[in-house]
Length: 177
Length: 424
Image 1 (tube, rainbow over the protein chains, first blue to last red):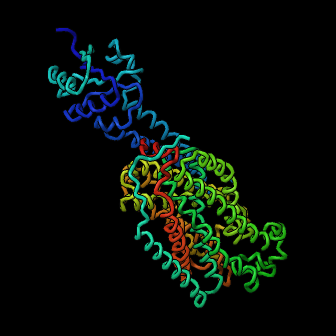
Image 2: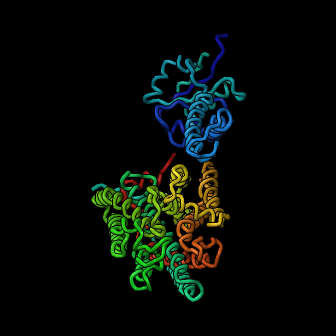
Image 3: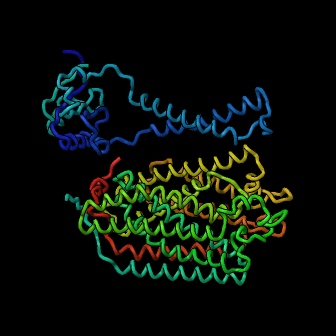
């Protein structure tokens, strides 16, 4: 037998064709698969059965961390490590710590959002098996693809191929890892 | 001319339930106004007048917010908000009635007693500590701006500007429904380009004359922006309430989708943060600079002259948590923004808290014999309530009267197709 297969790739010529095929793959219960399109196809996430991203939750954690970092930093510098009266104000007040805490909330939220997005997408990724496929560049131009990975528990070469054919996929190929 | 008539089913019949709701709103409004008038036999005229000022400022703020949102919609050539824009245009029908309802406050300033029933600076003999308004250097320096003539002329100018801009927006939008001519879109853009600075200036000066000048010693450069934040938040909340109402009534079926609610919810979140930013900045700058001419305004709202905390301190805390933290954390959630019942609940909550915000800014002008502000929880709250219901009834009536005069959505707007298929 040749090198282990990464999965199957099928070509679709139109966005509606891909959209309805995605619905069929979703309904067949596959989890490890993806669509490759030259532009965002609205509603495709629903057709693929994708849930909303969890990035906002990571952002919220980042924001809360930033807020408390800002508050405790001002408290630590002004009231604990080197107590100093400035402008007749108390050593610590959330009032003047607020601008710092607010800025760090935004900064840490941004870091958490970018970081969370990279992490969840598995970025940076320098190699992906579909890149070996000679037609893949047209996925940035005028063709649509569905890739079903062999590691999906439901993957079965014959059945998956039959599903993609039934869904209207053309030119179904086995991808090397 | 190319037109893009909407293909969605649009029920256009002026049904009788709207007409009867309009009558009910008008009756509720008139009862509220009558009850407020009865208040004159129970409380002092100043207390009733300031409660009326809370009511009229509240509803004017909401309608100004609608005006600004429609102008912003046109200046950005926005698409998703096209389906809700028409309802804000109906809301603009209230401006002329608000002008009429503001009239009593102007009249008592000219013909009522010593002219100082509402705004103390209108009477040069009004007693301020250490002298009278007329001998007060801070008044003398501001007297070119703070005079009865200026106040009256400016207030008339505000309402003329708002009624005029509203009339232009409504005419262009409603006419386009009939002929689909793109010149109406161009006219709306012109109105928006000149209307936004006019709107910004008029709402700022309205906030200064009507509300801020109650304590004319005070300085705050944030005041107009604070008022603007409340205006927009009020109008967005009404937008949500109307969207959910029309959806469940059946009109918006096939028109409204989840993404419209998500988008307006995002704006509500943005303006919640904006309000907090402005309100905190005002407080923080005054707290940090610690100058008596500025701090007295917050001192009044925290402690009495004997140093004991007063009720307004707790009202301020209610604003901090209720006007910012509660809506902020609720609006962070996607699910809450798109669940009809929840987003409508948040909208009602924000509308209530805007009213409390206006009470916080206006009612401490009512002082007892020692110069301490009268407490928040008092009979005056009843007159605030009757004023809000009274003026609100008239505004809702004006909206419902306008509602059947135009199609539900601007069916020939160039952006209506995009709006109907609005997606993330």
